[in-house]
Length: 482
Image (cartoon, rainbow, N blue to C red; front, side, top):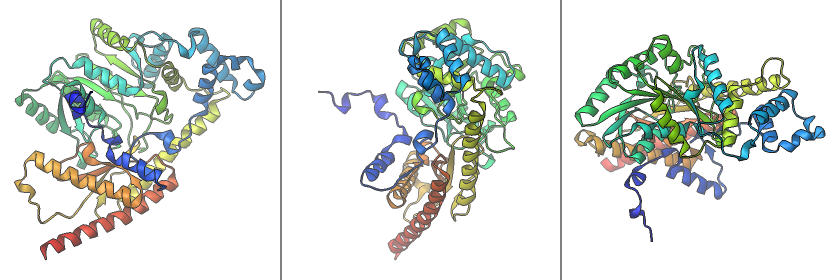
């Protein structure tokens, strides 16, 4: 019989914190009747965000085309959606139950290319677009394609979304962590990047790519144009491909911030020697269609023979799921002014984004009132990476610890804190150690997706818990010294 010891060492080593033991415990408590406010994962519709009428109406007709013959039912659908569905079925008569071309349905790939062209004002090519099961599958495929030997390394941000660290471990590559600058609004720092890549080379690791998440997960930061330009120059200097995770590009709340795609910046500065993999998804933005698993990866500065291999890799999985491909099409071709569905679409879209902005601001304002906590108001995305302080344990001398020992010690501290936050206050967040953090600091990641009233309840309970937790720690330390 198979045992755990029979499994892949890489699988056993891979970690994915956002669905780890704290979430498992939260589910147990919920089954016992406890109210839990889940802030551990960016899953909008599970946290009461309503789906867009436009997308769900179109999908409902596509899943059951005979409805198009039922006039008594069609009265409840906007005319432009009915016409769009008919147009989709004319170009893809097999419907949602058949395999598609490996890289995705051609007219949808063209629509993605048109979307990028309209967004950035730059040339695009549908043949450089592959439709994927969410952005995650595009990220995983890109890592797999670039990883040719065990000492190949991928630069990933610290903190980072653990998809990257888990996938690199699973596929047998090396992680090259680079700290992003918390004191400078979580922008990237060239000195830190250079030190990270040079350290990796000294350790026998061959850097092949750098991953960037913009807007940031878990930080909520939006990178400036100048910062992206610096990153492109850094990648050129060290012959790195760029993996640009841009799934939160619609989620920018700070009026002083603006999303700039890597594709646009590279085009404008004339960069043709750095290969770019950029990812987008229907899971985030204002759609929140995580369950439909739709997304795409666009390639730039990649030769045709390389592109053929990437399409071959996608073909091994046959194709992305068709509902996800259709959802991606609907994301990049929204209703236009004058369409019957337009006003409802705009009202729902703007309402979701305005609510996210209000909750981000509330979270930042209230957390900064808590003694021993700090948070830069998230500029974008759906998360806040909250910094908190705990009194030092006088029995522990961290100056005698190795880096590994210190990391283990600090991981236990933030995990114990977050587990206590769940048990005592019913708040489910993810320890900062699950994303990575600067030694000597403690964080947790929370979403601000739950309804506004739950966010208000969240910060109230967080303050009460934090003050009690710190007080009890101080008392226990005093007792140990008496």
